[in-house]
Image 1 (cartoon, one colour):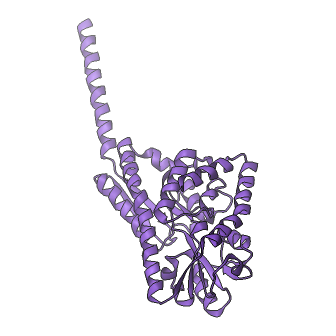
Image 2 (tube, rainbow, N blue to C red; image 1 turned 120 degrees about the vertical axis):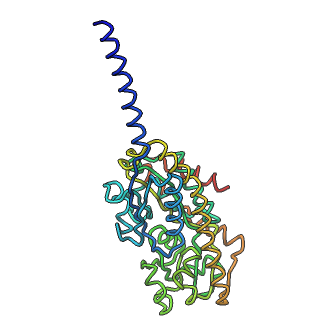
Image 3 (tube, rainbow, N blue to C red; image 1 turned 90 degrees about the vertical axis):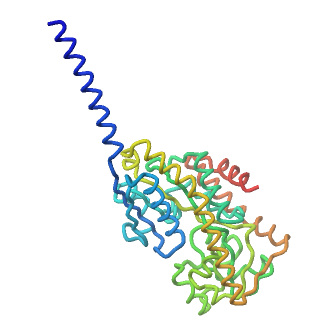
Length: 337
């Protein structure tokens, strides 16, 4: 009887081990179908870069992850993409933090006019800042990575040789860039990029603040005459790629590692894509024979000084919410030195 009991226990242990191995093997072989909401149209270089990320994840996962792309707001519009990911409507989403004003108070600091020199730098800085601060406002998703465009410049129908000449101009601007326009004594006029071409053409606005890639992408270079180098106060627009937390937690560790590995590589891919777009935009405007204006050092310093109220407002508004806005801005500036 005793020998039978020992044999029974041994058999159960073996069966238990087999069951565990089968479960682990089953988890390793399970496939995952994910969707990805991207607000850029499929033809945009950033949409293509996001799709390349998805295909690379699929390949390195050995086909265990499959990702269906939904470009151009077809799964969720740009302003609702983050919440679509939180709720599970989208497994993965890419959009712009600033499209949901007030939702990301600390991260609004990424868009400040701190003099970003290019998109690669802006993208690297954005990821470094999120890694360091781990903001609570992103705690309801898994962050894949951030990216950000190159410096906003002033594209104008009028000649601008000094900061004083910007005052009293009507300048197309939205969100943070509208605050920049106001700080420079000009009048911000809010409108979509799609409406800006005609507004410049008809004189509704005198100029627009935008990354230079916009002058080609939206053909606005055809209806401006000057590109003013305002990179001393170059602002950016930070964008996110995030995953639903339940989706992330459902993935086995080896697939999570695949996504993290590819995502780390794609940070620079997105930053370089923005810079490629800017180079194409600059070449487009030069081919049109438009004039590039380099403001003297004294005027660049005047631009920077005019931004002080914007920095102060950011620090005040974040610290009223108990957020470390002053430290965030200090660290941000340190990364740009």
